[in-house]
Structures are given as structure tokens and as C-alpha cells.
Image 1 (cartoon, one colour):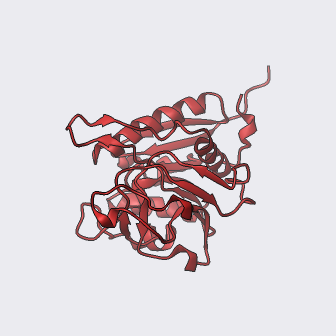
Image 2 (cartoon, helix red, strand yellow):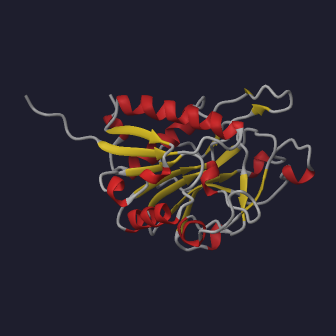
Image 3 (tube, rainbow, N blue to C red):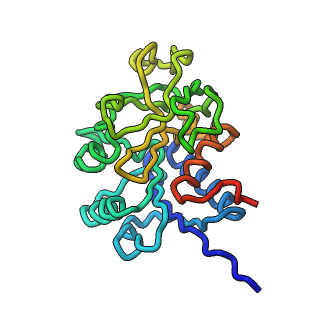
Length: 259
């Protein structure tokens, strides 16, 4: 009997401690990826032990996923940088790109935020989490080639960045917020409602096998202190298609191989 082909290995790292909305997303995406892996060409595992982000453990990993945060220790950071500079692949969601001096997650990793992501520090966000209309900027890329020109994203807290990614020749912006979304956000603070501007949502860096997706913040009932989940990220077929095609592009596996 012929043996089944070896599956690609996808390992996700998370912290799962900062903000109920991020914790909600981590639980949701972890369950979603676990189910996705059952009928596809990859096996999936997740861990909140960032010390597993080391050279030995990464040697057999095809794709690393950051579900919420980033590694903090220097050995883990160097191991990840070495992995990416030597052909590794990475998929990151929402909060993993956050960095702000003076916060719990300061910009103290230039390679990651400036060279790898290209975005620099976090600059601002919309509030509350709301849907937004996405503009697919590159229909020829494998990640977006099967998407409509515009689609409505799940509710999310949308980020803006210190650096203008359009000025970085190595960054390919695949999806951005469409201007028809404005005004975006409900406040109550005025600066958390965007009325204009350019905001990339999904991008890659040509120097690496990587893709960042800004989605990853569910709406939560903070006001009544119940932390009840008011929205979910993966109740969205088009957005799910984007994430599936991103993952399969990174592992060089045809998504049509899903049973």
C-alpha cells in the first residue's frame, strides 16, 4: 500500500494574555486552523511556550504563525530571524505587528518592525471594532487572485503605522481599506474615527516568505464587564479564502488538495 505523502508542518505561537479581544481571537483561530488541517496537506500545532522558537525546533517547521504577540527574548528573536533569513515562512495576525515605545510592547526589535514588517511602530487604531470594505490591490498575486476586487471584512480594530509602506520597494501591499469605508470607527474618541487616509491591511516582503494580515481583533462587550464576544473573525467566507490561500501559498501547497 502506498504511503500518504508527508504533510507540511505549521506551528503557531501565541501568548493569549493581553486583552480579551485578542484572547478571543487566539481561541477562535486556533480552533479554525486545527479544523482546516484535518482535511489538507499540513499538520498543525500551537504553543504558548515561546522558548520553543529555537533553531532545533524550527528545523522541521514549514510555516511559523504568530497569533497575537511576538517573541521577547533575544535568543528566540535571533532564532526566528535566522529561520526567516534561511528560507523559513511566516504568517502573522493583527497584534503581532504592534510596537509602541512606552507600552508593554516597545519598539525594541528593529529587524522585525523595520526590516521584516517594514511598518515601524504602531501609530493609531479605529474604535470600536467595525467591519470595513477591503480593496484588493493586486489581483495577480496567488493570495488574492481568487478574491473579488472588494469585499467586506469581519469586525476588526484597524491599525495604522508609522511608516508609509508604499515607499518601501520591497513591500507588496495586497489589500488595503477602501475609501468607501470612511468614516471608519465609532469612537467615542475623535481620533479613533478615520475620515480619510491610506491604510494597508495585508502585505508581503519580497525578501522573505512572509505575509502579514491585520485581521485578528474580535468585538467584545467591555462596557458591562462581561467580556462577551460580540463578533468573530472567521464568520466570513471571502476573508477565510484570503487566509487559506495565504497559508497554502506559504507552504507551496495547492489549496485544491483539501478533501
